[in-house]
Picture 1 (cartoon, rainbow, N blue to C red):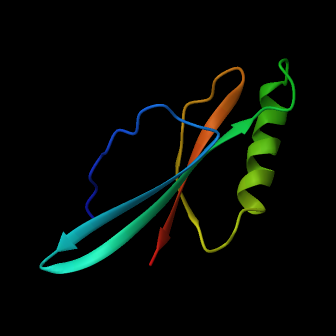
Picture 2 (cartoon, rainbow, N blue to C red):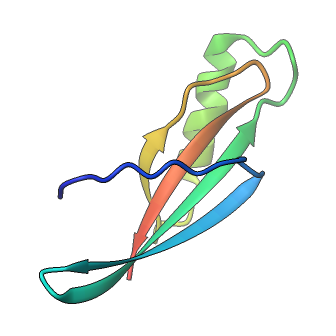
Length: 85
């Protein structure tokens, strides 16, 4: 699948995005969910951050596919999921 990048301003704690597209005359709705995963403390070692991230992804709703892991900050990391309809 080809990709189109759309910038989404002001990332909230959980943000759902629906995009209606027309491909070869056929309409399709693409659904994305962007979530911020907060680290469980300010001084979490990198090894523990990986475990927190892995647990979140493994336990996530299986109807949603992980498509992007954002750059981590000291407080959180963004995760983008996609659902086909």
